[in-house]
Length: 443
Length: 59
Image (cartoon, rainbow over the protein chains, first blue to last red):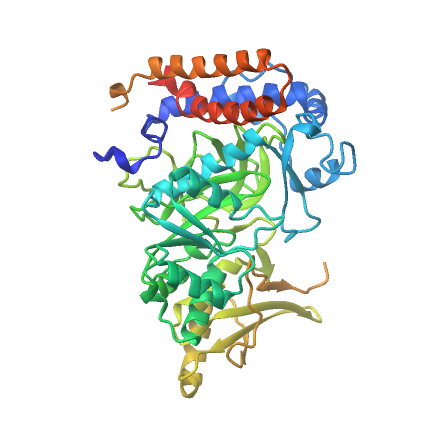
């Protein structure tokens, strides 16, 4: 454990010995399992059909008997009452105080119900994150976010307030106005998707402001894997002169993972609030050893309104084979979410993860932050088209840039690409989740 | 390190907060201003339970 206790939001839970943490997790799993069985018609039927009832979960080894849920099930329950959430709900509708929905990146949005207690819990989860990333009551935090039906930075806002930070809501302002407001108020931190953080830096430069001069000390990213991709993280840190931290969460799960100020390569899992299991995609075996990729099955122990128990998130992660010097006993996932089980696709017979392409593109300083990947089928052959932009001033080096890009892509992904150069700033820019990978092959 | 914290006493005080809130709810005469503010107080109390009470027997 680090000697300085002030680095922890809760030194008791964050440094609990591993075996004690495991005992705590089993107890909390039993509690949410029993709650869901007794209060949610959906979960009761799911567990009855599997021959399980309260009291059946006694040990960690029993947890694997509990049926998983997936996003398709979350969507399907919405066709049943109570409107609009369906019978996964475990509280009377009048106790629901918060509506949010998923972004719909992978299909029909899922509607998420939270009680006021659940909303306190969201802020609590984020409080662990922000405190670990150095946010304190001396910070003035800007939130350049549209405050809408997506949960995104709502919970970050409430958590920053909980920490005692001064929070500036950057709601309906456009990007230029947000930058000017951050500059005027001497904000010290902000939160956004990595795509938007880079876009803000571009906009700042266009209006004659070097982002480094604004005085931002820390940036928390979420919504996309960028801040866990070393080249993207470095690009953001260089642009803003600030420390950049990744955080992972999801509307239907909660905020479950975060980088801390000690800046290891990975993210801590808040194991006092979540159970993360990693499942081998082929065999279904639960992976405990470091370094092996698998998809995440996650349980939120304390979300009561619409429980999330053994949710098959399709996010691909792996346990790290290193620890963090911060002293937290929470386990670390290496490199964040490294892909999606439904995103990693075979192209020309080779497994391709879109994050590998981003790592290459963002490592070349002559290229802009934007790119687009389109996979098509010509006859029986897959083709990958990569659209890029070259930054102003580097146009004459085009041939050299293309050669290096092709070489790196081949080394990192074992695939060849058709590369199109587009005029600077002509590719789409995104404020929330970017959609840069398009698989247009017939399925 | 965790030995430096008196978790048993902290948990005792948290339980007192919950009991007082629940008692106030009973005698609140159904006043909305009492009920709804207590709902918020109890939600915050739950966060104390998650942080302290849940951990007390594991340290």
